[in-house]
Length: 112
Image 1: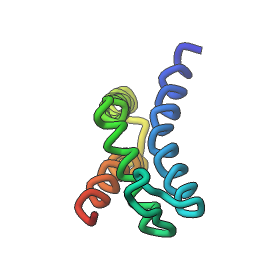
Image 2 (image 1 turned 180 degrees about the horizontal axis):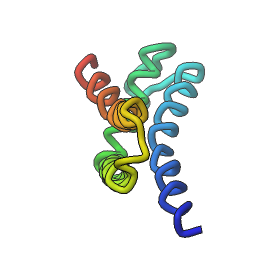
Image 3 (image 1 turned 135 degrees about the horizontal axis):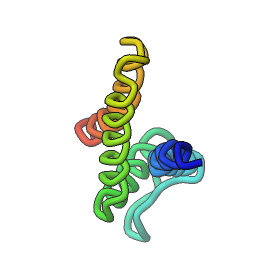
């Protein structure tokens, strides 16, 4: 059971990203507006606006940075422990999976 707890926490550390994307998809269909003075937007504009707002909110309260740090620590410990039992393709897959989400977040910030 002790070996499964870090893996469960790793899976749960992706929850903020899923929440941001889910909220973006929800806002695509139901609209996204910041208040009474601003008009509602729909579609891709609502998706981008709501996703970026949630990412900024989850970075202000350091949820996403803590998740990224845990993912990198887990990846490092996993690679150190299984140095001889793991293929190069698996290492590349794990590194790309962990680093893909921050890259997507940066792309959202740059394009908006």
